[in-house]
Each structure stands twice: as C-alpha cells, then as structure tokens.
Length: 225
Image 1 (cartoon, rainbow, N blue to C red):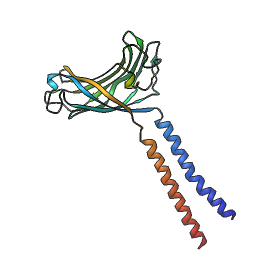
Image 2 (image 1 turned 120 degrees about the vertical axis):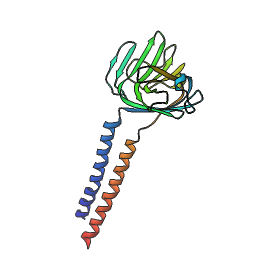
Image 3 (image 1 turned 180 degrees about the vertical axis):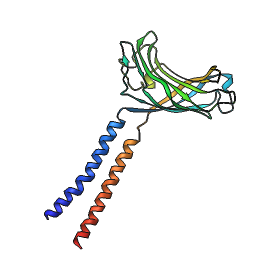
Image 4 (image 1 turned 45 degrees about the horizontal axis):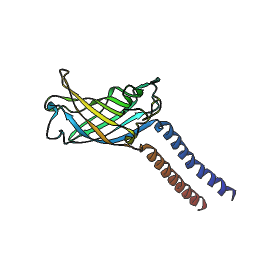
C-alpha cells in the first residue's frame, strides 16, 4: 500500500511540474506581446500604384503585433516607444506588405493641439510592382479630435474604434531612385487577437500528463507480473 502511494505521488508530481513549467515559460514569453487584426478601405491611391489587383475598390485587411513592455519616453503630452512593433501584415487587394526590421515606433499624443492620437509606424517590405515601386513604410493613426480617448502617454493598447473620431492608414512605396508614392485609407474594424503559443504549450503539458500517466500504469502492471 505504501509503495502504491509513493508511486501515485511520484507519477502525479512529475507531469504537474511539467505543466507548471510550461505555464511559467508562457507567462514570461508572451505576457508583453499584443496582437491586433484590422479591416478597412482605400480612399486614395497614386496612379503609379493602380492595377487590377490594387485600386480604390480593393479590400484591406491585416494585423500588427507589438511589445507593450517596450521602454521609451513618456512625457506630459507625448509618449514615444521606438522598437515596440514586432510584426505587421497588410493586404490591399492582391498586394501584400509585411514587417521588416528597421525603424518603427508606437507614439501616443494626449491632449495635444489636435486631440489624442495612437500611432503605429514601421518599415515594411513587399514585391516590386511593374512600375518599379515596392512597399517601404506603413503608418496607422487612430484619432480623437477633442481628447479623452485614453489617459496618459504610457505605452498601451489602441483605443476602441467606437471612441474615435477618425482612423487613417498609409502604405508608402518607393522606387530605386528614392521617389515615394502612397496608398491611403481608413480602418473600420480593429480586433484584439489572442496569441496561440500559450494554448499550444498548455496542450503540450496535457499530452505530457497523459503520456507519463500511461507509462506509469505500464510500469505498475509490469511490476505485478
């Protein structure tokens, strides 16, 4: 009987400890990452960018990710957090631009001359169009003309679209000579998306629990033979 109790304690503690380790690692690795998806419309497009797959009727969708634990400067009216952006994907019709390592920041303006603004800006990349232009930068601005969209200039999640008076996005393209053109529009939906890593690790913990438990039972049956 005592041998059985020792076995049960040992076989329970090991998988339980594994699950705890998974949980701790997940919290440390993912707690600071925030992911959003969005949809929108095109309002202006430079003639050099016009094509059957990217024009004024094109649908707009995408996502971005940032680290809300990024250090920066937070003043009375402006907070700037360079390097906060860690991911971007934007689809405009049949064209796709994505995040690339380079200059990026999230900047908050609180009760300035134009009200409140939550701004994300990052370098981007994409294939070259027949005109020779390719994606270079993406800029998203969420505005509230009279203020009150958020309090303070610490790094924080974007405000709810329902609390805003305007939304703007811009994808800038450049060619090999440095000329720049852009396509612009607004977003009409912004949704927080849970990051999946925590669920994957939790599932791995459960699999370990089942596997180790089954192995222990096999060992117990073997010891009785």
